[in-house]
Every structure is written in structure tokens, then in C-alpha cells.
Length: 337
Figure: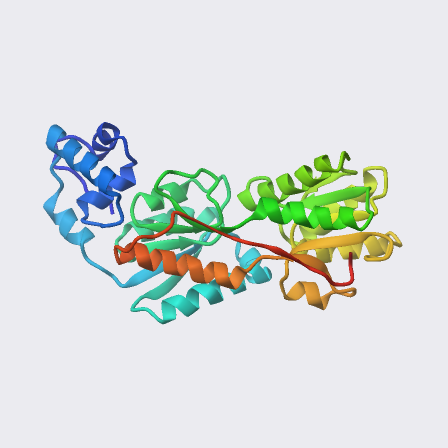
């Protein structure tokens, strides 16, 4: 929580500028948090002395209160949250770790319309920390959350700050190995249905695809953006087929989008796995429900959720915590590619 200074003294922004740290770091020092490096702690204390910054005593008293609650923030529309198996795995992993701790978890599905309400709740002192399980470049309110309570992000933030904590999979490598798998099986006319270009996961998987295609001395047949939903995957697959040359393989950046791609391929008289190889990403329950079963890149979503919760609990307890935790991916071979 931000500590308001007594009128007439320096502001928290001035202290941050003098110390060369973020506003949230100053707030944590003033609130007595141990989740600050010794160098930053010394710089902030020196700036406070030099500027004669005086925190409001009542605010400090309120800020030191522990709620034993954390918030799980999902900046997505409700239908996306409940329709994507990725979120179920993430929440299960987080729940396992939180369930074994003294904390309870409050979940906020914060769509665009709800972001102001979610921010007000988080700034109100109801939680000790937050986990953000998905985010877009437009989710600027999340920066303000991190100024108030410790935050751990699921996935690399769109704008990484020096004191951010996040747990991610190696999406660039995942996109690269997925495409390399298709290339190794002789496919040369390869297209991709990428994830959203306002999400780091979508950007990184597309980068991995482009890297592998370039290393092979090829050009993609088509690149069409999806939105990590089944409908978005179907629309993007239709655009791929309408682009001109028919691909002999397609890397689809999520299993849900691959299910949509299956539908469109069959509508055009093409059989997934026979006429066009299809590679997904996630290894969710969707991949084994499809026929043929989907060859896909496994990301350890359950493990990612566990790590996110563990990192936040370490921060809240004042224990050392890694700022960036990157988990590996692997190709799971089935019948579609």
C-alpha cells in the first residue's frame, strides 16, 4: 500500500527518483517489507533522509496489517477464463500451494470493465499480495497493483520492470521446437496461427516459429493472428487457406485454436494429419479429445501455478525469491503431425 506523506513534505515519487528505484520499492521500504535488495534499501533510506520524507502514521499502521489473503487476478473476459483449460491447470497448481499455507485465495476475473473495481479492491488493504495469471499490453492497471502489493505474474509481463517477479514457460523455444518438428518431417509449406500480438506468449511463440523457418532458409506460407480461442483459431485458419498457397503443415499456438483449425480444414475437404499436419501448443485435455489426437507442445501449466504461488509466499515471508523462473516445454507426439 502506498504511504501518503504529510502535507508539505516530499512525495513518494520524489523519493523514488532520488533513490533511482521504482515507486513500489519505496512503498515497500516504508511499509517494512523485506522483499527489497540491500542496495535498494540503503538508497531509499538515504533518499528519505535527504528529502525529509515523512510517512503518514495512520497509513503506515494500516499498511502493516496482514490479511493472510492473496488475490488471484485474471484480466480476461469470463467466457475466456472458463473456456480455456490452461486457466484450470494454473488455478489448480496455485490452489495446491496456497491450500498448504496460512493464506486464503480470492479470485478476481478482471475484464476491461472491471479493472477499476479490481484495482480499488486491491488498493484497499484486503490482500497481502497478488498473482496475475494472464495479461495484455493494454492492462496498464496491473502496474498500479504492483505499486501497492507484491505481485507475481504468470508469464513474462509486457513491460518488465527491475523488481518484477514472474513465472513463465520458454515460449520462444516452444515455438521453435514445434516448427522444427514439422520441418524434420519434411514439411516445407508451413503456416502459423499465432496467439494475440498484445500478449507476450503470443509474441514469443510467433518469434520461435519465425526463427525456425528462417534457419531452414524458408518463408512462411501464411501468418495469421488468433486470440487463443476456438473461434479465433477457426477464423485465422480460414484466412490461412484463403491466402493462396495451401500449407502442408500449420503450427497453431494453442490447442483450443487448433480445434477451431480442425473444423475449418474439414469444411474445406482437408483432413488434419493427412492433408495438412497440425501442431498445437499446451497439451491440454483438448489435445487428446481431438481425432486424430493433436501433436502439441506441452507447457507445464500445473507446475507453473505451483511456482507462482511459491514465489509469492517466499516474498511475503521475506525469503529470497527468483525474479524470473522459466520452465521448459516439450513436443508430445500424437496423430496430427
